[in-house]
Amino acid sequence: MERAVGTVVRGVRAPIIREGDDLAAIVTKSVLDCAAAEGVAFRDRDIVSVTEAIVARAQGNYATPDDIAADVRAKFGEHTVGVIFPILSRNRFAVCLRGIARGVKKMVLMLSYPSDEVGNHLIEPDLLDEAGINPWSDVLTEARYRELFGETPHYFTGVDYVSYYRDLIEKEGCELEIIFANDAREILKHTGYVLTCDIHTRARTKRRLTQAGAKLVLGLDGILTAPVNGSGYNETYGLLGSNKATEEKIKLFPRNGQVFVDTVAAKLREATGKNIEVMIYGDGAFKDPVGKIWELADPVVSPAYTAGLEGTPNELKLKYLADNDFAGLNGEELRQAIKGRIAAKDGSSLVGNMVSEGTTPRRLTDLIGSLCDLTSGSGDKGTPIVYIQGYFDNYTND
Image (cartoon, rainbow, N blue to C red; front, top):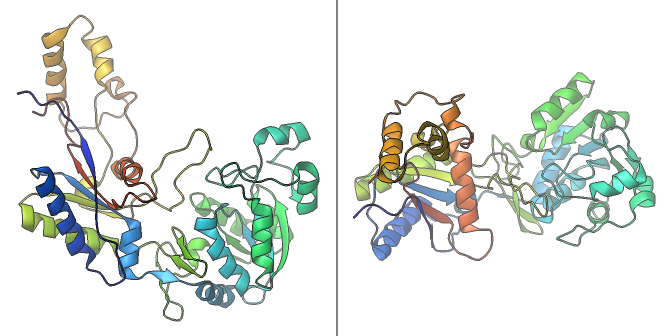
């Protein structure tokens, strides 16, 4: 019988992971159990993907606001610190902000507006138009912001983040000024010591501040890059990619990811005889069209993956072939013509070729990580492992 199914994605249930667990062994057993239960035959280039959360949990990669405060204090001393461009998130940033506030005497908090970097809105853009405000040139004080827009609860969470962040900071005994601006260099009118909290634009922000004469510029990737009083850390990403664990603890992005994925791949190869790709995934790289939120609050979609997941797709657009090259064919003749064209691919890049126009020009790990994030969700599915078959297959594979 002709093959009727292409790519198959399975969310794999696993035990609740605790610090010190042998996660590589747990992942391997969970995938093997899944295959046995579902009657699945393993194939070369299957993919096993593991959420970063359980990797970090097994590592015990946690830190507290006191750890953050100690590192901030050590790096900024007694200076007033400009904290700029944080995302608006109780889960992603509130505990980090508590630690930062605990480590400084005075803070100037500069919020981008009308939204943060990943699309969480302080205010609707239409309100700026009504008020005659240009967010690219106008700098607002907190008093002016309130005069123009009043209380501004978030569309989904109901939280007024200006009030929420002010209360959080002042409870730590930190003197605070809040301004609203979108040019990073505006903060230098208040202090030359800056902690920039943006994620994907951080390199440009640091460069612009340094060129404008800042005395010290660090990003969140410069805080907790080494242990503080025995804390967790991430030498590459620091606080980026962290999540709230409790009100007084955050889980950091996992360390030593390459060792982990290579270990799991070796265990699966020993158990199945197949070369199975393995990756760690975090946030998917997709945007919600209603809430306008770009999901990717992690610094990367995948911090570690096996070598077979390097690169981008190199695909033909089937509907382009059907509508152009083979417009006069139908039925089995059309099917065989398209299969022949796919089979004739020689591995050279199709970038710039019309037959690839409209295929997805993104890295494989970003595409697969997004698929995995949507599969596992962020709630109570209990499937922190995703097993994918047929991802690299095409129309010619039987």
